[in-house]
Every structure is written in structure tokens, then in C-alpha cells.
Image (cartoon, rainbow, N blue to C red; front, top):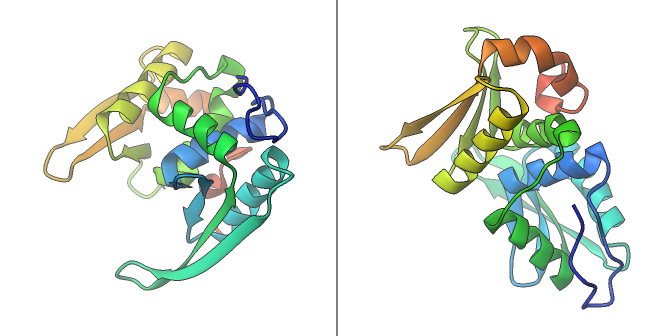
Length: 193
């Protein structure tokens, strides 16, 4: 996946590595954007650190900025890391609103980013992995990517009152790909508490 022509003096960027696609999935889940800024918001310092390295890679000529604030009812410390780069903002927004072509060999890292951003792994009740979406467009687009990769591997549920769409990865998919997802996904690492 290549970026558009260089119009702002930044170096051009192409999605090539597994980490690039992981960060794309993470950004689509928890991304931050303004008119000329692109970044990530999260309460996870690990995710912020990982995305900061990605920002340094894609926008080496721009200063990376970070702000900290208190988030939500539980009063978590949250972070927002971002860079002011119009070209990258335009590129990422085109991926958010347009067609998304993920090569099949990069789908697992992409899904891992989505899981780390808006996913949940439930080992206790064995419901597996689910990824929540705030709009139907994102959910249906990801569902099509997953089903193209592996038939009958996921299902989409709509929770109307919550205004949420949820993709459930089926057990057959998890049996085949859980170990691959664990290579990238921080939420799937064993807990250390």
C-alpha cells in the first residue's frame, strides 16, 4: 500500500512491514486526528511507545508531541501521542474513509492492532476474541477482509441500543491463528500480575 504524491515536503511512506500494518489497525481503532495532526490515544504506555516509534518512522522530519490527561469515569491516566504532518493526516484519513487493501500476509498484524485498540480476549468464559466498532462501515470492511482471508471465520453482531458493531472471531479461526496473533498483539500476552 503506497502513499500519495509528496505535497508537503515529507518523505513518502509505504506500508511494508508487519509493524506498519499493526499500527494501521491500532490507529483505526484508537486513532487521533485533527486538521493537520495524526496520532494515537490510549491508557497503555506500551501502545503509546510502540506507536511513537511508528510516528518517528513515517514522519521523521516532524516533532512528536505527547500530552497526558485523566480519562473517563475510572480516572485513568491517558496519553495522546501525535505529530503535526498534513500529508500523513491526509493519507491516514483516506484509509479510514476509503478502500482498505490489506495483503493477506499482513492481515494478522493488522487484526492484532485492531484487537489491541478495540478488542477483548475472554479466556474465562471462552467466548474468544471480539472487536468492537463505532460504525457499520469499519465493521463491515474488516469483516470482508477477514472472510476473504478465511471463510466462515468471523461473524458480525449489531447492538442497536449501544450503537456498536462487534466482530466475533470464531473458534476455528482462533485455533489456526491465535499463536500468530500472539506475535503482535499486546492484549494476548500472558498477564504478569
